[in-house]
Image (cartoon, rainbow, N blue to C red):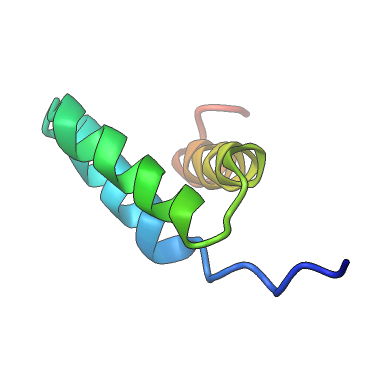
Length: 64
């Protein structure tokens, strides 16, 4: 059985990052749960989060 394409993870990534910055664990859990419910595997969320973090660190020169 072929699975339908997953939703765009970026809106969920934005919610996850915002709730993490605000130290709002309830919102963080909700964002992760909503992403999972929309068909985005948690592993994919982690991959996208890691890529976003790496890009941010590269742009700031922190990884140079």
